[in-house]
Amino acid sequence: MLEGSWQVAKIAGIPVRVHFSWFIVFGLITWALATQYFPQVAPELPQITNYLRGALAAFLLFLSVTIHELSHSFVAKKYKIPITSITLFIFGGVAQMKKEPSSPKAEIYMALAGPFSSYVLGLIFFIFYKLLGEYHGLKAIADYLFQINFILGTFNLIPGFPMDGGRVLRAFLWQKSGDYLSATRKASKAGERIALFFIILGFISLFTGYLGNVWLLLIGWFLYTAAQSSYQQATAKGILAGVKIKNVMTSEVITVNSDTLLSELVDNYFLRYGYSGFPIVEGDKVIGIIHLKGIKEVPKDRWVSTSAKDVMQVLDSSLVISEDDDVSIILERMVHEDKGRFLVINNDRLIGLITRSGIARYLQIKSVLKE
Image (cartoon, rainbow, N blue to C red; front, side, top):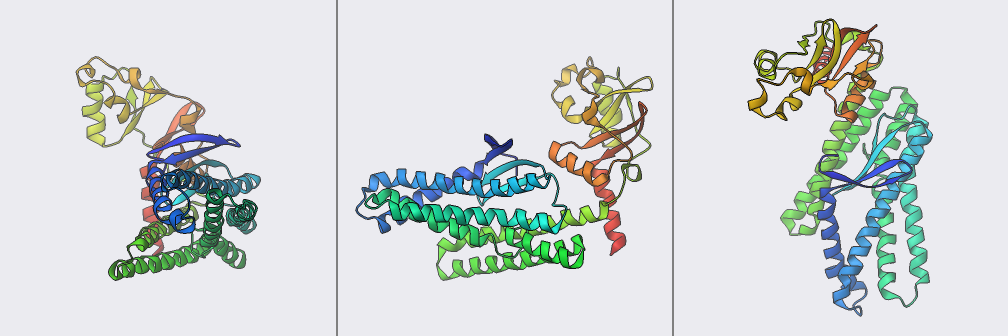
């Protein structure tokens, strides 16, 4: 989600990002409002200014989506759930959480905050619509935003995970059974069924000539993949619950001397073992870690004169974890910090290495054994 997006603001410490796909849908909404909506609801307005009204309405729509996501985020922060960013993209917006809610109560309040804010915004725009009187251009914009916010709030209450309504459903199932994983599985399955319904409607629209409903296909596909992804994440969380790093880490770590030349490093380590990173040592002390990405930044003609120490990432606390850390928490760090490996160090001694691929293999084996 974050690939191809740029930070445009920071609200209450939460970065707000815009994905490149947002510009596509912004243009489409502006065009649709200018050529179809405004000529229909306010035909007396000059056509040439409808594009300005369309752009303003599209901007206010995405501002409404941002407020919707901020509402989720503010409640999440109240329950000590860190929010890394909010990203606006082609299907609306998404708030990125570092962890899932710790209780059904937190889940319900978080989920309902978004639709509630959309309904409040809809009411505010409806009041503006009533107060604007003869200002037909602004009145048409207010009417559109009143309708779209009520549609946004209602659509998000559809009981299919990971939509807001699906999160409410999961919270109720979780509260009833006490089983977070089972509740997520059932809510995700509901989300998949709803997504398939949208996809089928989209195909029917294609064959019957209603091309405007092609969006249903895209929304259905997005919801289906999101529901599957959410279930996989929940399954991983269930499997990794209580598992410590020492139970998953690799104890036999291949290290590289700091004076090893990059040419030797590539031939005798990266190509030989197939790993994307190695700890760098001087004697018995770990001083850093070298990644394939770092080597690629060095011109090949300098590989025979450049040592591992010259391009390594110097060891600091961001690379080091404890053998007693929870694997689920470290996996979240890997995802959010975009890191593939951590060094496990005890009393200044390297005792292991944990990688994202190693955790994936552990999850795969545990899943097979549970079947």
